[in-house]
Image (cartoon, rainbow, N blue to C red):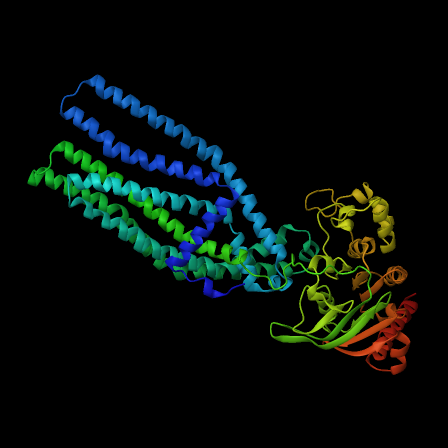
Length: 610
């Protein structure tokens, strides 16, 4: 995402952001704009009517001795108007706004989630991006609503203040000078205070992420066993305490400035103008005798109205500016241009798989190259394996193949054509993939296997896939079978499988998907040797009808592969069948023999124990 160049806290930028928020509201729920307009029109209209017209009629009527009936009728009619406005205001505040805010919430989060789904994978591995995404999601609908009301309130308030200003000017030309006080209080000191609050918010955002993480880990089941069987809770408390201390430090850093600016804002906004106008009016009435009591009453009433209107105007302006700063995160996030957009269109790839080829491919992450000049080909119906030590770049190669990343240099070809020329969704649909860091969701077993796809006779297909993965018997023992809810996220009776069983459910996803090429990334990392042996036999059998690629840290499982690619530090160092690589007596053979010796050592230890 764009960096600090979009975070300038200038009036122009914040107002552009505010107008952007108005446009979003107009697109999603224009009703909130219409009702906000009438609310402010009624609110400021009441002030102007009451203090500029109602009070004048009443005071003039009393001072000139008009009939009581005439004054009473005027009061009744005015009361009926006020009551009608009150009914409408109450209806909007308690019925319309909650409904419109929910609609705005749904619309804006639909856009946010669509953008979040569409951005490339590396964005979520970028701390700066994630912080901005978090801030964009933080009460976006509330900030947009505040801006809508702020813009309309400020606009209508300016018209109302001009009207009251003219009425005051007719009574006293100099009294209007008192409006300078709330101008200074709100526009100068209030604006400075909002700037400091935004800076504090930005500095505290990374710490809030830590606090949210620790809080989440305390109620999710993911780490429950480790927390109880280790001292990791003390480390989490340390993280929480340090993040809290940093937040306190940030708060202290801005405390004096915020307190001082708050004091000055209140002093100039309220105290100076109220006390000043009162003393001025009393002086003119009691000392100079240049204003009579009815005029003093009306002028004081108008000054009070002017004060509150100006206060609301500048409160709205400050609200616009404050939320306009926050909306900057939303705007920059939604306007971010993806390098690999998920909705990228292009040529539709043929499902008749011929080959996938890496041609002089290099890939750098955060300016560090982790794949170097990689070239290899996997042909149709080939069963291939990527092997090597941890950090060799095996999973990165899979991500490049699936176009979760694009190469820094070189090209990846599918059926002889650059994969960047294909429709992205259609291209990825060629592959069925199980990642090592799979995720099981708070859904049924069946839904976790299908992953949103639909087939004829899908129940039978789910069972068959679970059987290939070696977990069907375990699932059938559950009360609801494949309809059993997984995890306890939404159901206290949800099923929590073992690590190996969960991995098998994830592997079943790849078995069930009808795809020309199937990829298994460490599919047996949580399995015992017997379960691993059965799983790889099923994977090899699956390879009779599909092109297969899998990553395994256990080389004994790749002996039946057509091709084995040995990687080291992001470089392909050996390639061939198991027999060819063993005959070459290179790195692959050394790694295989070392693993074989370890297996034999374990077996000998077990025999001694027995």
